[in-house]
Image (cartoon, rainbow, N blue to C red):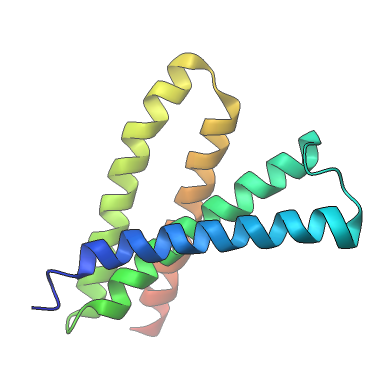
Length: 122
């Protein structure tokens, strides 16, 4: 029964992580560091950090909810994330949307980090 909840949990944890990293970064950047949240470097760092968190926690959420065969769940979620990212990269490339391409690349980094972590645990 928990296998049914694996994919929704992966999406939910990924987007919760994306939201929290974005909110924390914007708060820190605007209050502690004194960066303008709308400056180019701030937007690049925000985009990269939040998308890496989304990719990493997407895989970690699937792994945490899977009842057994956690390696299989990790690799399946990583593969699904890579496929979704590939489908999202093509329109960004065609429109030459650099922000979207950065987001997809950062998501791929997060997915790879989570899969690599699981591979080192095995």
